[in-house]
Structure formats: structure tokens, C-alpha cells
Length: 95
Image (cartoon, rainbow, N blue to C red):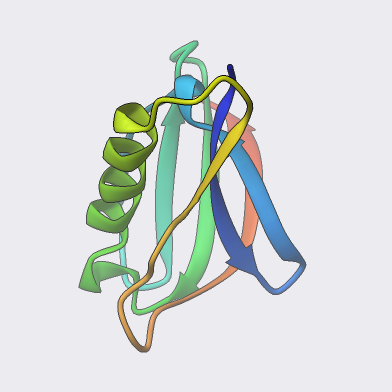
């Protein structure tokens, strides 16, 4: 069944299909990217203090999702380090 990770943003809780995530990287303290499986798209992440472990928090949630056996949909929350916030997500295409 489908496995999702959830991120709390200023717009509420957002779900991302864990099977569609290739990897995450942090560009700066206010910008990060979650690269998606098709290689042509990514999720642009905006927030604060993202260099303090954002990519690691995404990877931890993905590992938890991968190791969870379930016959129904599963959602794993991304546990952000203290002081870090995600203000928004936007899907973008690489140009």
C-alpha cells in the first residue's frame, strides 16, 4: 500500500508519497529541495533554519516508511529539529 511522509507547513499538514522521493538536499537556511522520482520535478521547500538537519529529517522519515509493514496506507511524520520550520512547499520542474 501507499506510504507517505507528512510535513507541517504554514498551510497545514502536507503529504508526500514516499515512493516518489529520490532524495532531499538543503540549498540554504531558507531553501531546500525534495527530488522526485521522475527526475524532472522537485518540491521546493521554504522555511527557516533548514541547514540544521532538514535533509536528514526527510531521510529518517523515509527509512521509517520503508521499514513499516502495513496492509493499508501509512503516514510517517517528518520530525524536524527544534527551531526549524517549513513555511511552504511548491512543485517545480527542472529547466
